[in-house]
Image 1 (tube, rainbow, N blue to C red):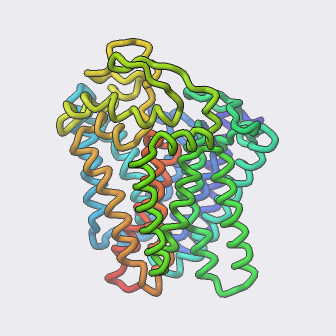
Image 2: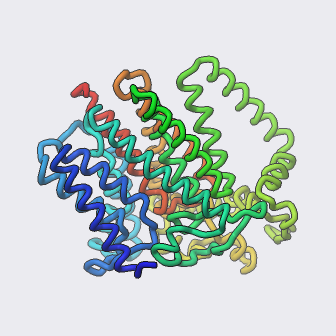
Image 3: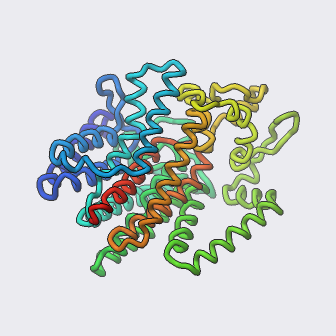
Length: 451
């Protein structure tokens, strides 16, 4: 097992050396894309303090790769703006305004806001500038995805996390190291929580599909199909309902984008689900609790003078009811990052009973979380980013050069949005999602140059 500092240095050094070789052989765009993607396989708990800032491998590699890109190909920086560019810039501004309004310093808040929102987005924005860059990037992402998924499957089956064996144990972040479902360990892989790990793999899943449909060689297609199957199994290794349902949604959306008949079938299925929710919400809840093995772990909780049964799934259903008073008074800028960092969050209008606040302290809904953190301005921009990415991808779906990638990413964005209603927006997988937003924006921006 490596020491944390040694592991960080080895990972950063290896990735930067690979990036430098690619920079010389293939150019700045491929070097940027592949170097950042390789950092996805490094565990998030591996950090190094640099000028007083605790910096993960993904962050450092992205900064270094972007600086190299800007120095090597300065003309490529300037490209037509997209609606996603404006939305991400808006999120940075709202983040700074909210946290400074609540007592944060301008300098440190601006650095954090740029690192949290703009850095991964910009790294994706310039990761692919032509169809020449698509196949090597798809192969690289697929390779990283297989490593992540295989690590998750090994962890689920054996109980051993390979990244902990190599880089040291992860810090406990509100989730036990040996959590299990159905007698199997829930894999957390390179992240701090199984649901983050499942979403991370889900976010990267479109790339083997792109490689499979783009490649002209049977061997490459076979490898891509294998990678795609392994990636879906990797999502399942988290044993988290949100990512697994997200994977099912991804497949349904892809089919509906590419087939008119599937659109009709999906519409009928959505109508049937809506009727089921309206008529028998309790029955649906019970079935989802059964899927999570929670029916034998129900507990009672007092809420608004009534006793209600609580499970992990019902906790998510109660969130809006519990936090609505705070949400309705959040204003345009919310309560700031510091208020929602501690658990229970430091926001007003929560239940008076300490036990109830403690039991419902996790804000397991990314959209509720951003209303509380950045107010309605931040929540609208956050939601708008998903809508803009999905619409942009769908609009490009019938473009011969990039249609497969654009439509696959659009379906992933919609699936991820659905899954994020069950968990707060963690940087463990949020980095890769924002990187994917950047890839979509980069594709849209380059359409004027017609690849």
